[in-house]
Length: 348
Image (cartoon, rainbow, N blue to C red; front, side):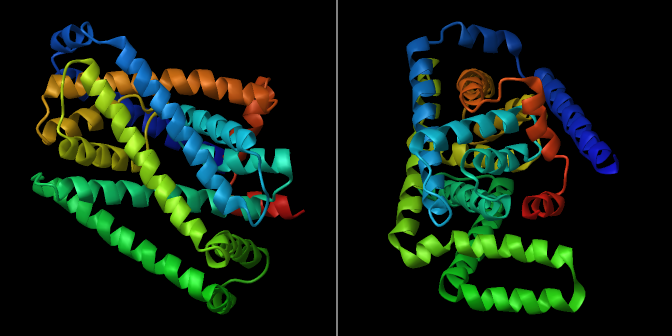
């Protein structure tokens, strides 16, 4: 009950933060001008943005299939269904529930253990961060001047990127040695089941990158697909700006999207209500786009994502057999357990 209460407390805190951000956004933005801007929206371009997002989600699902190959060869349709359903779950309850949902659904459908699949989800998501930082760096070095606080964001992101690259290189080249080092370090302080669970996660992470060591083209494929999906996301944003009659320079749009995407690292309220509007408007207005124009586009983006995820995620849940509230609750409740406990269950 203590863990469940903690997670409930986190969700309540995130919801309150989202409401505060929403209130601040409503206070700062001229809603009359936003409504006037949205009244001139060209809806075919908004629909095109939605279609682009579907392509982006599909490519992300296929990318996950690459890192899953050492454990299972999952059909593209199943990858898409599981990824889309888990994205909807994470959108509704943004407590990293979607990552665990992917592993649970994969176990139910294909018998892949959570200890093996959960690290692949982390690996897959890390490539999104890599692509965002690469694209953001390209945009920021294309003649666009960033305010100092946003430059610091990119500096921190670049450091994270370098650390990740070094770590991946070490895992690819010396995976077995790293396992041995981690095992020796853990044996000094931790014994028993907890040590086994931690080693299981580390082994899963190393094994997940084994596909890169065995087939180096797998890394190239994941990087290319990651940059492609980020470019598609930028293209969708371009369509949304164009739908309200605003033509944005590519460098500004790329940089703005990269900064906006990084704000999702901050925990949000259910449906990202408040945080998406506040952070999105702040980011795009800070790089030279009008405040009300930025707010209008963020509203369109939020609406498109919510509708597309609601419809396609609902279809995915239905196709996966999640047709009752109790079945849905089983995944959400699993998120109330700590990873170690879940891995322990998986081993029994």
